[in-house]
Image 1: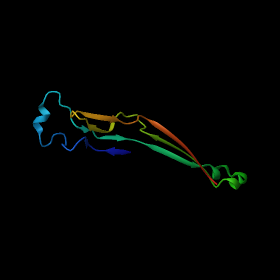
Image 2 (image 1 turned 90 degrees about the horizontal axis):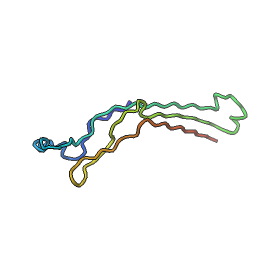
Image 3 (image 1 turned 180 degrees about the vertical axis):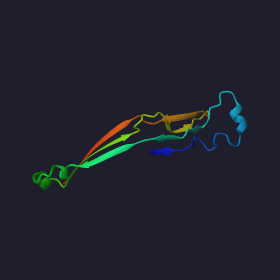
Image 4 (image 1 turned 30 degrees about the vertical axis):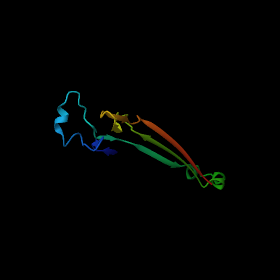
Length: 106
């Protein structure tokens, strides 16, 4: 589980020192909402599992691993910024993604 709290896009902290600016028509908050995502992974060493002396003679380890990020495919922003006009921009995170890795040790 990964929890990220509220993030401000600039040093104004959402116009904390100038709260009247938030009352202007069309004002958009300058922060990223908190979010929680879940990731998981598993790793397995294949050489001891196979118990083959022939395989163990050539390879010290053969490790397969699988990692899944953002298991529940949550939509959220990871970062952002303020452009030259003062308008906030957000950069979305990746949706669910899967990595497979095979590591061989000689």
